[in-house]
Every structure is written in structure tokens, then in C-alpha cells.
Amino acid sequence: MAIPIAPHAWHRNREGVGIWEGRGKVVATGVGTSPTARRWDEKPETSMGALTILAIRRAIEDAGITPDEIDGIVLTPESTTGVSNDPNSPAPAGWDDVFKMVDYPQAGITRGDIDWILLNMPELKNVEFKMNGPVCMSVSFTTAAEAVSRGLTKTCLVVRGWHNLAGRYYVGQGAAALETAAGPGKYGSIWGMPACATTAMVFEEYCNKYGKRHEMMAPFIVEERRNGLMNPDGYYTQHRPEMITVDDYLSGRWIAKPANIYDNDLPIQAALAVIFTTPELAAHHKQKPVYILNHAQTRPELQGVVPTLNEWERATDKMGRMLYEGAGIGPEDVSFENMYDGFTLFHQFHVEGLRFGSRGEKRGYALDLYQTDISIEGPNPVSPSGGNNGNGRTRWWNHRDCILQIQGRSPSQITRKAEIGISGAHVPNFCDALVWAASAD
Amino acid sequence: MCPRCGNPGLVWKPVSGRGHIQTRVVIYDSPVSTLIPDQPFNVATISIDEEPDLTMLSHLPGVPVDKVPIGAAVEVFFESTPATGQKVPEWRLVG
Image (cartoon, rainbow over all chains, first blue to last red; front, side, top):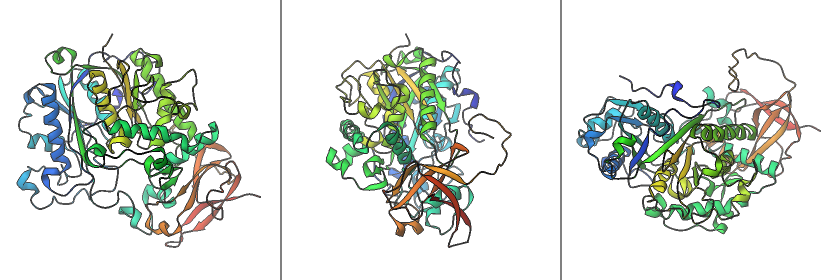
């Protein structure tokens, strides 16, 4: 039977709905992170699926529980945003010597699959709740939060793996290698834009409107890498532990000007698993429970083929208002923000939507904020996880770090007390975000 | 259906074919193999005069990279693709 996705009714996508009914009923405890790699070396034991299994086992161990306590899994099946194998490609030779296979031959290779995990992790023998959070792990987090709060699962794994195959992520791959364009792609792909170009366009519009410049991004880029290099699980720490400088950033080669190479996150292989449960059951978990105070969603309201500054500002303003309303807090209560940064040039839209670090400004202030102390030691820690830019592309370092910060064990722990943090992904008008807190009070 | 308000009653309406340049990028690393020889090249968003939030894309033929006049008036014309002859809307500066 096909695994369902979260019902649309679970989305908290409008204002005026009050405090979230699940507020204080769901906590995160254990976190498990796999090793990273730049690309898959085509060995089963280093596949996305293998990394996922490892992350799950680490999360269970980290929580100090037994596998038979897990009764639910929410997983994001998509494991890349680049061009990948044909879904019907057979598994490589030797794959079935290592893993049991479901009907879908790319399960565990280029697509996450709950049934594949259960088949290959017999210790997860009590899983009854299964649901997919499509597209982004933030969807899985919000889905799992609803599922636990509604009593559909008591101890739930939230899971996402990423794969990265040989070859360039997009360039000259798939439809981009053809001389013609067909289907919906013909409206956008014929212009030849790399993935970051849409963000760069809106960023350019932002700079023109508010009198900002691309080089004002430099302190943020450097600080994110610094934060990422504190993370022993991050790609850069494990494989390219070099700090970058302002000069590196300013001399980075253009991809879609004003987006340069450092504004683009690096695709990697990695997996994350997190344990969600109830506050009552968390009492016997090893890690401090981190409460979820609210979650919210925005989705595109596109009228053209690309978003506009108006749309992204409208969407992120709405996200900020929804999150605060449902959590019963305000911007002044937020200790740190870990909104998405891949691509870096849209991070400030999220920051401004939350009014994070605002001194009364509503819009056009974030690049000025970047010129102040945004470090983990400062009063306004921006992206303390280091995000994708500091750790490699996963769309989940930011969520993971919210849990670790509030538990007081982040490798880039902020100096100010980490009481409430916000994370969300991915783009400004297609975002699922959560408010994490040390307490439900 | 309107993605913003959910109104299902959308209908096609003719427009003047005029707009303004809203923003732009310069592409240095295109994924599309056939366009790589043309790098670097412009891609701009065009805001339609009758509906400013409705945007289209253009390479702005003839406009040098880094010389795109943001806010300038443009008008549509149609180019044919070399592979199939498909008509594609493009935009050029007015005046």
C-alpha cells in the first residue's frame, strides 16, 4: 500500500487560527547524523540508504531508547534536488547481497523508502505509523509533530537521506542536455538559468529597492563557514576544513551574477534521523526534551514563471506572523534563528520575515544586521548551525542545530541562553518552519 | 485557478505586449548545453504593464551584460528557436 503524505488539513498555513493545538505535546530528543561524502562511490555500504540506517541507529542510541520503542516513521523520500538516476534503473551489481530489496529498485540508492528501511532494519519491529513528508525534511518535521500531537505515533523517527551521484549536479544533465525543451520546463528551462538564478534575481531586486550590495553578504558567508567548521559532522569539517575569507567570497566566480560559487551550497551524501515523542515518554530518554511550540507552512502564489520580491516578502512576513501567533511568542523571545540558507541570498528574507534582530525595522535591514555581531557569541546569532553553506547541502543542519542548541550540546553553541529557536526550509515562498523551545511554558 | 486567491475563474485576456524590466541576472554557468557557448548572457524578469506581479523572462537580445537598465520600458517580439522553429516571446528596449 502506498505510504500517505500528511493531510492538507494538518497544514497551519493561515493566520487567525490561534495557539497550535499540539503546542507542548511534542518534543525532540535523540539525534543521529551519518558521515558525509561529496559523492557516492557506488558501494552499498556508503549508499544513501546505508547512511540512513546508520543515522537511525545513532538517533536511537542518542535518545537512550530501544528500537522496539519506535512506533512511527516520517521520511522525506526525495534524496536530491539535482538530476539523478531514472527511477526504474536497476540496482548495481552486488546491491542485493547487502540489502533486501523492495519493488522499487532505486530504494536506498536515489530515493528514501520507509518499507525499504523496515525491511533492512528488523529491529524496528513495532512501526505502525508510516507517512512521507515530501520534498523537504522540514515537511517531515512538521508532519511528525502533528502525528505525535494527535496521538498517531508515540515515538517517531523523522528521517532524510541525501545522495549525490557522479557528474555535475545539473549542468548538461537530463533535459538540459537536449536541444529542445518540452512540457512545463519549456516555460523556464529555455532561458538557461542555473538553480540559483531565481534567488539571485530576487536578491538583485532587493538590493535595488533597499540600496544594498552583494558584498554586504560577506560577513554572513564567512560566519556560516566558521560555524560549520565547528561541527564534526559537517562536510567541510570532515573533508575540506579550510576557513574562507571575505576576499575569497568577493573573488568567487559568478554562477548567476549576483550569485557566486559561495552563494551556492555543495551537494553531498548524508543522512539525519531525529526522535520525536511526547513529553511524558521523553522523561526516560537520555537527552533533554526540546519542545515544539508551533509549525507553519507557506506555499507559492506565483503569478509568473519566477517569484518576485513582493511575493517573497509577503510569504516570509506571513510565516513570521503565523509562527508567533501559534507559539504564543514574539520576535523578542527568539534566542537564535536557523532558517534555510541554500541559497545564501535568500536567507535575509527569512530573517526579516521573523523580524529577527530587528530594532523596529520591518524590511531591508538584514544585510545591515550582517555587518554587526551575528556570531554565536553575539546578541543576534544568525544561522549558528552554519547551514548548508557551512556544512553541505542537506536542508536539515538548521533543524538539527535548533534541537542541539536548546539541549546545550551544539558544536557551535551560542553564548546567550538558547531558549527558543526557529528553523525552516526551504525557499521563502515554499517553507515549513518550526518553533523549538526549552520549555512549553 | 489563481494561485494567490484561489479564484477558479481565470480567463485569457490580450495584453499590450508592453512591460518593464524588473530585475536581472547574468548567467555564467548555465546547465543548458546549447546555451553554454553564449555565456555570459542576461536573463531579466519583465513585469507586464497590465499586471505587474505577472512576470516573464527574457534574454534581452542586444543588451550588453551588466548594462541592463532596471525599470526600462520593453516590448515583446517573437523569436523562432533554431531546433524546431517554435515561437518564443522575447523582449526589447523601447525607444
